[in-house]
Image (cartoon, rainbow, N blue to C red; front, side, top):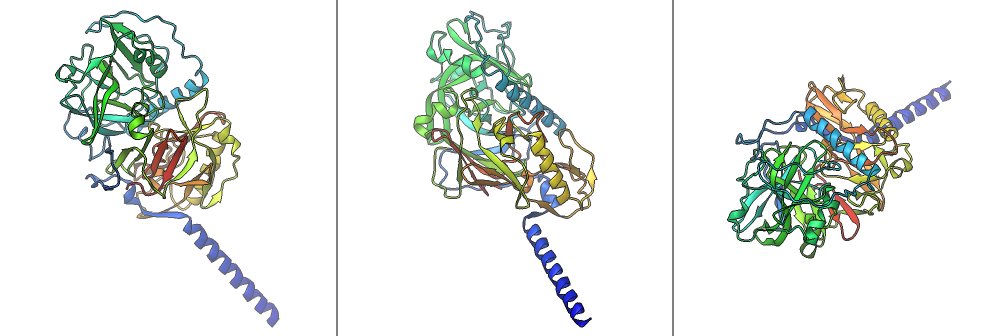
Length: 477
């Protein structure tokens, strides 16, 4: 009897010890944060500057307290979370459809002669390019003397454009003075017969037109936004020490849509007319950025390469049928340090890209269901809230001060592991509605898209010439 009692005590102690070890291990793979940190501050966080970062622009959220766009009344009202997520749906629809019809971009219309004035006709459109609300923007200088312009930046777009006087069609409200090419000594139009003009079709999927021998571009986005005007060259000032001569851009005379506040768009895609390719001699087709954790933070956009041992690289091959996207090789996802039981073929069947303009990461439905179910188990102690828009897994954290949530990591090719921070895992509508920030595609064969919410605080490096993309933690706050 005494031996049985001793054995029982030993077994009980062993079970308690193993349970404690398991609990400690599980907790070590959780994020522990104050719930209040999920909400953006009403004041702007000071940017952290690195003296080693040359050719760097400050990245600001369009609708946060650091933004001048939302503080002086010139921009339209701030969009709701529903607005942002609905526009994100439109962007996803376009990206997915573009893959299906990537070979159908041959607009056979001959170049037409038009008068670009207040009565000018819209350009014929074959399709529309993806664009959301342009949540993040930078400030660059254009012209001689230079005029500062706030431009949304987007890795899914190629053409850089801005609104221009005299706004022959129409211009939306923007914070900066609208660029007037007549006041710049370095501006000139591209002619209709120029090889530069001929590049527009493959970049915008709309045949360029001709107005008084000047090349006229047109670009339309999936949400209905548009810009039409003169394809031109101008001096672009990136930083006080970095100037790009004869930079190709669109000088918009007819503009509209959800851009309100920003002056236009900085295209960071792969096409020859993109900023990345036009500045290849200066910046070696390399750029990096960090998006802040909340809209009250400040990030950066840096051009050119620099040594950083904290960045791990994965290959970014170019797909022959979709050369315009930045592809990455996703192998799996871990939750609480444990690999989820999903096959890597679920990612490779449709392919995967990283995109600065897509807000929410889209996963194959099978992958999403596995991630969601495992996440729900790890969050079982918190009260559930009603689903919201794209999100079916939400929590009411209004009565929670200290929050513990499972870690989520993405495993990429080349042995790269990308650890998401809490603002990259949760989307905060309000303290009463905090949701798992992922959504499912319609089919497992659809393209996986790694969106900008999941990229928060990461340093993301695009080495376009080297065919690779790097990830580093703690790039910004």
